[in-house]
Image (cartoon, rainbow, N blue to C red):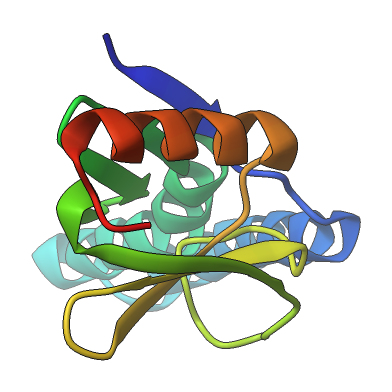
Length: 142
């Protein structure tokens, strides 16, 4: 049975993402006013996809799913799959590095040979308990 945890979202990041979305709408209209034909519509599509669609997908599709054998991480159009057996450590961090986390209240997942992933589940205690149980069941070496 899979368990899914949504990302915690820091207020400052929410403001940045909503600001990016708000700025892209006037930019799209400005492109339409300056260009004609397919070039204008291509520009509008690119501006809306990157400036509106990407932040929206990050806000609504950043989540962490624990299955019987892996941790599946999704953040907008990006995806990671971490085998539970490969997880070597999980530690709290406030590392601001780019990652599939919408908060600086993060967990660093160390796995494989020197690989790591930063995530920010809203319910960190519940996530930690669920991942520990899943790792034990999967026979992972945590």
